[in-house]
Length: 190
Image (cartoon, rainbow, N blue to C red):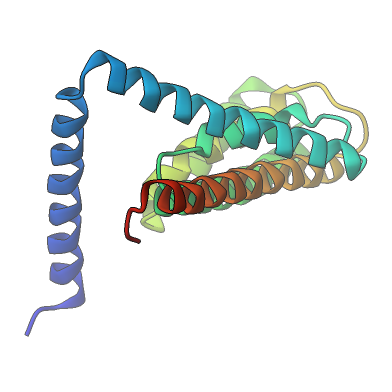
């Protein structure tokens, strides 16, 4: 009987092989096919960015560009990929925000405290087996601690988290809509 750890390792190996095969297939596309694929991906990303940006503004969040940045960063070719990327974005933003708030509250405006907070957030993600979220934790800590803002660190971090969530949700919605449209127009199975 396989242990859960071994089963996960085997699954990860199969996923890596599938990703390698997808890369090989993508490289074998003609320039015209790559142009169409690139345009579709760009359209998906810009629609998600617009939805996130204007959604943030409608909710009274003044810096909707964070939602647009998140939407572009998590937009992928498939809904499953966006879901995983969004999860990493959300978890990383929470960890980075909490670590950044704690560090800022303890030691205000000192670069060594910022550097240690980034290390702590990224390491915590790795310890929790969320390595991909670690990059986002580092970025979020940077935003919370180094980007000038008004109000408390907690308020600032919560607004950024809200904008990250809006951007991720926008990318999920747009990608899902593209998946449905593609299946209907091209008759591709699920």
